[in-house]
Length: 142
Image 1 (cartoon, rainbow, N blue to C red):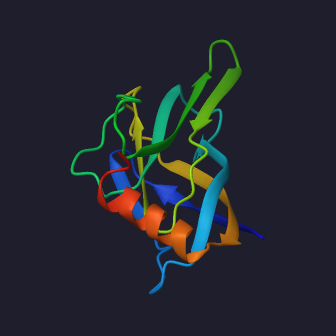
Image 2 (cartoon, one colour):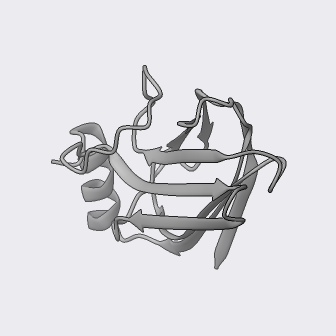
């Protein structure tokens, strides 16, 4: 089963998507992660949005794949002068069973609102898989 989530974030904003259950027996993997600004074509934008396993204290445009809490990142640019847009998305193929946290920022400094769309594939986890996924989340996915 595919579950989709969508919403908006102000530049520098963050939000949580509640996925956790009492027993942790429902797992998810990211299948799609896309973003676009709220007024496409109206201004130059450099949007960076990231998905984490834990809530972040700061929101920035820095991408660090050494951060074990980082699950996904997408970078969207639009240039009015060239009338072109580009989006690059990278996500980890890992099973999760806890809440995820999304951040967004406009690196162009225009403070544009970011629309996000995420598709997660849902599946049942065995007792062992649920334990491993929960422990990885608690330990920062070491």
